[in-house]
Length: 354
Image 1 (cartoon, rainbow, N blue to C red):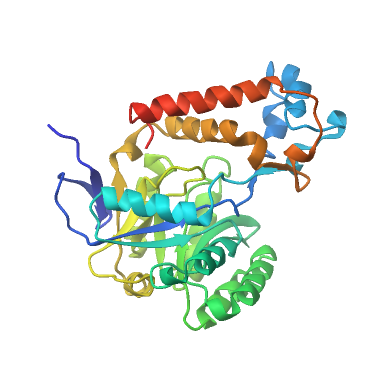
Image 2: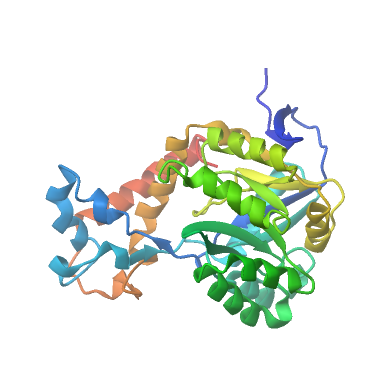
């Protein structure tokens, strides 16, 4: 029996779609990242203190070309996904075409950055009907960080709007933040991304999440079914959406040069504006590719391989590219990078990564 190409997420459940059958005309990549996103490597601080790994701490710091190895702070390290906004567009559009969709819409949602949408529209003004300036905004509610997909920030004052959103989000002024977002004309689509992503690390996360929804649920238009989060977590999101009668949209959340495993879909939307209004009115569906059901550890492993392959040119220390730190010759991690690229090439050949 042939494997379904994707599963449809609709009415708070998912069902297989037979190959060749098309129920939707438009695919929408709503949660994507480009090289404008900054991904912290601060977690290495406690990872490298673990037994055995702590013996390699100095060696690992050398791999980032730090002269003063003893003073290096992993919290000052971050990396940017190795993919440009235009490459995100081409990658996601190609994936949608392979699945047979007639139309494609896109929002690049870098972490607290709107530059990707601006850059893409500067390079390709003809894409204005199908993309919009957007971001994944970090905001604090009761001292806990949440992520809000903000899709369709008015372009004429986008930088000014972004500054206001950042100030209110960082200061924990959630009420002021949502009031401001609702005041924009046209107002953006607001999506609560991966609602349960801190459940394992913060025992009281679910209680705080429920209070957030009770306080600001009227402003949040949809919840996200996330392509990189575990299946159980996404099923909890479906239950949450059913409880509060919220639409569920799909987001890929890729931080590597691979297309989204989960997309939003529409039967009628022709433009990104059409889709925004459709979800605001309670519509919206999603699809997940068959690879979504692979073990989450495998998806994380593939993401790590992409990072290791490109680590030299995408990692920054104290906001300086690590390539700016002098070093005499190749070091062992460079060979790991070569090996990661070779492994990824083999995986692509056997269609284990796509």
